[in-house]
Image 1 (cartoon, rainbow, N blue to C red):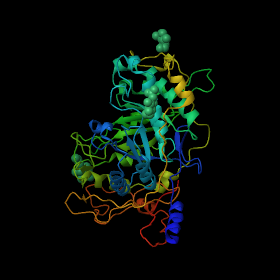
Image 2: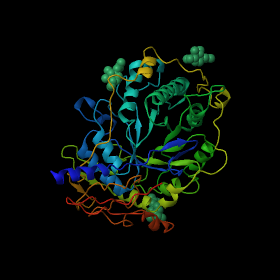
Image 3: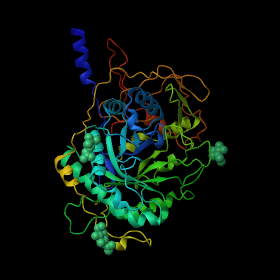
Image 4: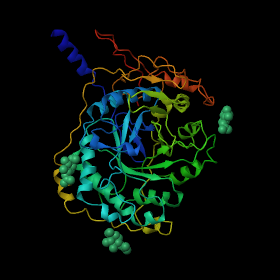
Length: 481
Ligand SMILES: *[C@@H]1O[C@H](CO)[C@@H](O)[C@H](O)[C@H]1NC(C)=O
Ligand SMILES: *[C@@H]1O[C@H](CO)[C@@H](O)[C@H](O)[C@H]1NC(C)=O
Ligand SMILES: *[C@@H]1O[C@H](CO)[C@@H](O)[C@H](O)[C@H]1NC(C)=O
């Protein structure tokens, strides 16, 4: 029993956590250090959007063994964030959230789902904005607000995709953002940013951006302006360039943003295999002043052919695809010490423009900044909280070993695959987990790095926890920002 309690005491000290981050002015920052944070993300949608079937008892963050497998592979990939689209507030996510936290990986979460009544519609939008819809979005907040690795919530995804939708949707997305922010202010112990994930349709992109980032004149505590702006952009295909891809126009358009801007999806697959050469642009000097990184689309292979791994849903086994290693190698070429160690520039941060129909440049885009009232029944939910209230909390994970078979593109196997817990206040980065059997860095088809700073960047202050009775409490290298 003595041994058992000693181990319990030990495991209590193992409850390491990523630092909670904030959206401050136009950047994500670690409030403890003041350092900026760049999202190095991957979209995590096992089974695709059609695979969201909460009635069958699971969603992407409810199955411990699946999350262990995927978190271990994402550590190898070198990402620090997942984007998860479809979550049920009524399932338990404690193990998966704890696993991703231990792996040093944040979560960007959509509060909506494609099911009827669980998202705003892009026509007759007023018909989809009602109390039980909002209740569901608040329930997602309740379910995830207590995890330290919850990075932000998306109040909508691509609800505006053309002029007709731009004519009706904007006030409703801004209203949902307002309602979520009011809910979080009242019921969360820390601020969690809320914002919109836009389709990169250039006709409506910058109007959407300004519509959501602006501040209402004369309103002291305007809760309706977004805390961030994200876009799903597929304009860099193959070996493109900053100019050819139109990334230059995005940077010009978002320069001076008052909120963090990032890609909530990227990774055009018009040219395959994908070289992922946009990675060096996204995290390079032309973009990082304006952008806070991005989320590559996507982890699991679906029919649309964007996947980095293929999952056999029947037995849970994984086949790694060549794009996985190409993407890993592009990330490994970056200098993360520099990227995650940057401070926001000194001086006054950019200010949000005042909301005014003059901000809107495209004919047909809704320039009405008088938002719809909170629908009947919803003010009570905002005041009292969702009932019954889903509760999320970190739990101890006693075993980080992956139980499924994982194979390389050439069919060789990865062995002893496991999540390597990151040190407290650490964040995952390339090199944290080099499982046996992975293809060595630099041997994939990725074009060579233009510099060799990367190697130094990868050697973060690793330390190994003294081996204890049951062994294998090795802490991986985690960067502290
Ligand atoms: C609000 O959400 C909770 C959690 O999902 C659910 O149990 C409850 O029935 C919902 N209430 C309303 C009024 O929709
Ligand atoms: C603007 O929106 C508000 C709220 O939906 C509505 O009451 C008002 O009539 C709209 N104004 C115009 C000019 O359309
Ligand atoms: C992209 O560039 C790399 C390195 O220069 C080259 O090996 C590869 O063939 C190019 N791919 C395409 C599709 O042009």
